[in-house]
Length: 172
Image: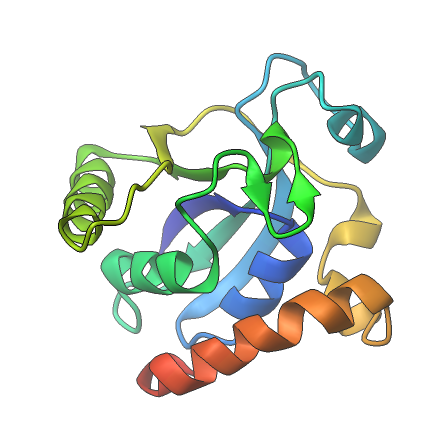
């Protein structure tokens, strides 16, 4: 088993997408990259902690590779907007890849270089994984628990459609 720590906007959205992938065994929504310990959702929303909303992905590398996870990551969010995803604005929504080892760092940087060759100005931060703080329980598996929530119904279905059209071979 390996882990990936990614932030691509709202963690409800990224979690809902990555849960669809074979080899992903568990996801924990949380916060990372800021200067406070044990932040709450309210702390994050105030925008003064510098934490990003992230998901910690446990995955079986015999079923899905880290590179495949990164390909999905870059396809389902906009890595060219600084501190923003759609209507969500703030440092907590930044595009970030926190790596656990040199191999993950190299794969992330290599993929970003490839994307930039297509004239994309990637603003995704690539940094060593900091301390991770799990979000409150009600954030975990949020979309499955709240399928009629308005924000989720607006934001998540387009991401799932993109996932299903581009990555059918990776779906459970």
